[in-house]
Length: 86
Image (cartoon, rainbow, N blue to C red; front, side, top):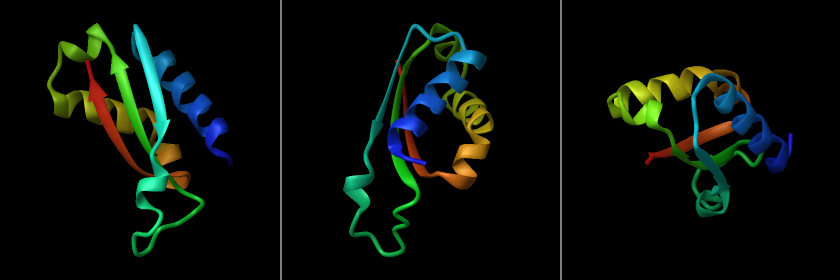
């Protein structure tokens, strides 16, 4: 899977499960390229979500929800995600 396909899947899955006003998904894999154990088949993503729904719950609850929605991708294609909720 390439990064553009992964970003499209992440956006689609999150929009399907969460009321989102705006979402931005960035590839930050280049920041980790020289880390020991870096797997070039897995990506590092920064997800910025503007969501009134997620803003109403704790950061832990919102992150758990996002991790649950993206569980398949986290197991196969995502090494780490940074989540910012506005």
